[in-house]
Amino acid sequence: MLHDPTQLRLGRRAPRVDSRTLRLGAYLTPGQLPEVPSKLDNGAGIKDWGLLKNDVLGDCTAAGILHLLMLWGQADGLYKSFTDADAISLYSQLCGYVPGKPETDQGGVEIDILNTWRKTPIMGCELTLYASVNPKNWALVKAAILLCGGLYMGLALPTSAQNEEVWKDTSGTPGSWGGHCVTASGYADRVTCLDDDTLTCITWGQPKKMTRKWLATYCDELYAPLSPTWLGPDNKAPNGFNMAQLQADLRLI
Image (cartoon, rainbow, N blue to C red; front, side):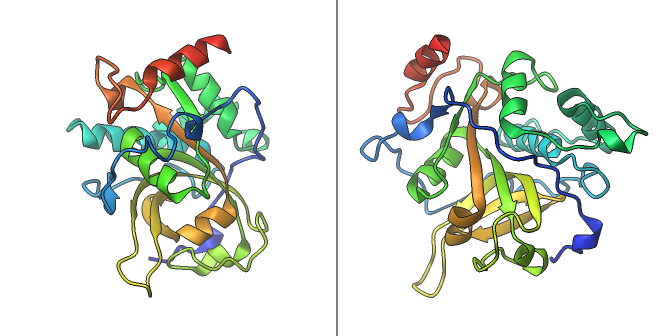
């Protein structure tokens, strides 16, 4: 389903580089990547994602967090849904938005939001750590979705994306539409040589597909968040993921 771009808002501010950010590729080398299925859709059972006010506010960074919590809850059999009021409250908490004062609707910086989440739980959900993922490494992207349940993604959207059912046109200038935050929920490897690998994200209350090439062109931030909500109460790492080393490295910073 196509969105009317005049009825949508973005809201991701320019990426901020933090040299301390852990890189998932340093812990999952090609020989250590888990075996992943050819297709995965962690959000398939969710029928109503909610716009979460991203049609009138630039709160995509807050909406992306809530969609991630919905993914984790769905997988655990503890489905959660959130309201517009929840989104506004979280946007205020994370980005300083003050309802009734449009000048405070300035969007958010993803890495700042993740760092805040590490210190303070969101909706009762803790964030143990996060690591960046190279969006050009398709095998790593798939493994990260399998291991973490979903990814927090930043896009430099081109204007060419405004009227595409599937994001696949890579001729547009990155960022010519603006910065946007979405939550990656699944992927599918191509079936035939005429197809392309696709990643599914949640944005503006709906699943949206993008091709692997489009992802590599327009994604300039991609983070794998790890939480006890997804890993379970024992915080046990799945599929040989080096959680112990990641936690040791995290303590050093």
